[in-house]
Length: 368
Image 1 (cartoon, one colour):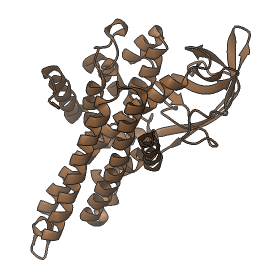
Image 2 (tube, one colour):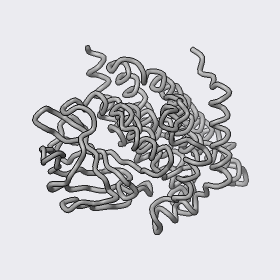
Image 3 (cartoon, helix red, strand yellow):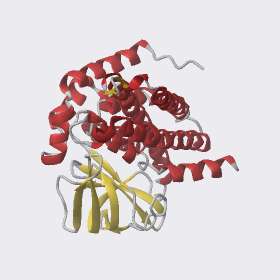
C-alpha cells in the first residue's frame, strides 16, 4: 500500500509547518490559554484566510478545498507538533463533518471563513462514553425545539459561537444547534481550564431554544462517524506531539552530562529511546490504518479507529512518561516544553473515547 503524500499534500504540510514555526510560539500560546482569551484569535483568522485549513476537508461549494481524511491527518500532525490549542479538530473536523451531512451550508461557510467556532456537546455524566444514550431531551415548542438536560466536558465551549447538542426526542437521538452568540435564558455554562491548557465547560439546558439539524431521531450514524473522524484526527495530532517529544529527548540526551559524559552514550538510555521510537512508528502505522478506513463501512471504520486509538493511548503514555523521566525533574516544569507536551499526550488518551473504551469496542467488533 502506498503511503506517499501527493505534491499538493506535501505543499499543505510544508506551508503549515513553516507558518507554525515562525508565527506560533509556545510561550504566547500558553499565556493566552492561562491568563488571556484562551486562544489566539489572530491565529484562527490566519488558519482561515492565509492557510485555508479550516475548509481542507470540506467541499469547494462551501469555500473548502475538497480534501479528505489524509489532508486532515497532515494538518492535525503539524498542529500537534507545534502544540496548537486552537480548536481545529472540534470545529473543522467533528462539527464540520456533522454540518456537512446535515447540509447546513450557511454555517459551513462561516466555519470555513473562520467566523464560526463550533463545539459538540455529547458527553453526559450518567452515560459517559456512550453518546447514543443521551439523557438530555428535546421537545417541540411552536415552530422550534427546546432542550432540557446537561452535558459535561464540552471542549472549546468557552470559545464557541455555536453548540451542536445531542438530545433524545420521541423519535430517538437527534442533533440540535444552539446559537451561543445570543445566549438564551436557561443556558448555564460552567467553564474551566483542562490539564493540557485548553478550555472546556459543563453546560446545563433548561428550556433552551434550539434548531433541529437533519432528520429527527436519525442522528446516531452521523454522530458515530464524527466521533471516529475526531478520534483519528487526535491520533494524528498525538503523532505530531510524540515526534516533538522524542526529538527533544534525544537532543537533551546529547547535551546533558553525567559522570563527565553525555547521558545519551549510556546503553540503557539508548535502549529506552529506541523503545520510544518503536512506539512512535507503530503509532504512525495505526494512524494510517485509521485514516485509510474512514470512508469504509461503519464496522470496518470503527475497528480501524479503535485499533489506532488503543495503540496511540499506549504509546502516548509510554513516550510521555519516559521523556519526562529522561529529562529528570526538569521534565514537569512550566519552563520546559516537554512538560506541556506530556500533559497533552495524557489528555489525548481520553478524547473521543478512552483507551479502555476503544479496546472494548475493538474486541466486540472482532467477535461479529
